Image (cartoon, rainbow, N blue to C red; front, side, top):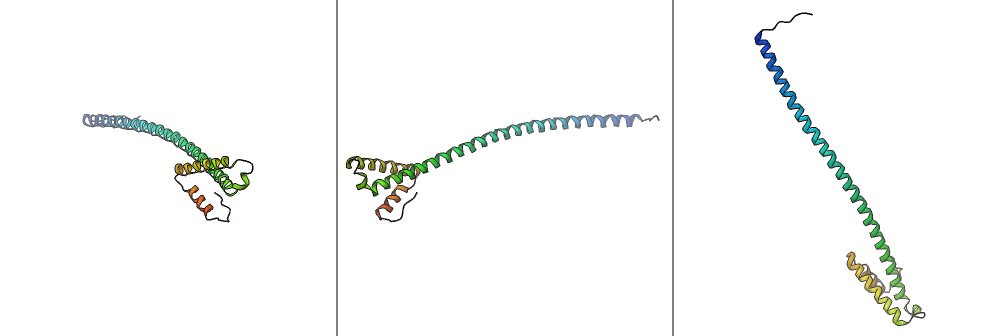
Length: 140
């Protein structure tokens, strides 16, 4: 192997360059460690957000299920009210007139309260349709 001879000045300059490279290497390692730590933090945050998203999706599905149940309950109650109101004379044959009126009044109160809770006028509109004597079958 060939022998390389350096002047003292070149040797000193080489040592300075090596020291500068070591310092750059340490700085780069520190930056890399910070980046790795940050990436783990971001990954943890993404996991947390993912769990929150899943919970929100489940909550929305539950709300949708309840809203559908509410709509069905309201529709069924409107139909019962309409039946009692439109067939009052037929129905009172088996029940006393007072019991039928009481049931009609309770159902009316229940439906008005449902309108109040869901912020609609479904029952009021239903009553208007009944008052007009609409021959159309009213479906909600």
